Amino acid sequence: MMWAAVISAFSSDRFSGEHTSAILLPVLQALLPGAHPHTLLAVHAGLRKAAHVTEYAILGALLVRALRGEGATPLRAALLAAGLGVVWAASDEMHQAFVPSRTAALGDVGFDTAGVLLGSLVWTLRGRRAPAAQLR
Image (tube, rainbow, N blue to C red; front, side, top):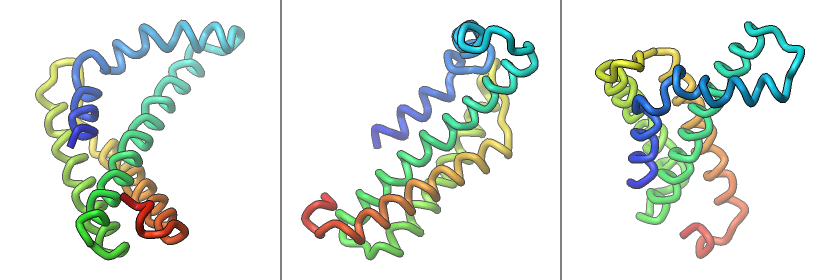
């Protein structure tokens, strides 16, 4: 799946906290000129965690969509998507353990899991309102 490759790219050195802070902290400082440096670092960390939730919410929605297209019931598709998403999140964190500028964090698997559950839920609920032909 192409989105899984995007997630893997986000796990590379290029998207480490060190590299994203070089870009985001000056932007945050311009947007929040009076903010204390600790506040800017906290906002940066929050944005990074929000990115985890967002990228995995997209993964969850895409997985449910694909599984529904293969004929899975809404509940089965959501459960399978959640399981596959959690497995991908765990393997992604293991991958980060081997990237020098990254660290593997169990907490990040939690953020990823929340995202995949959110995306699965949103896509499943969306499917209940849309005719079956629109799910593809």
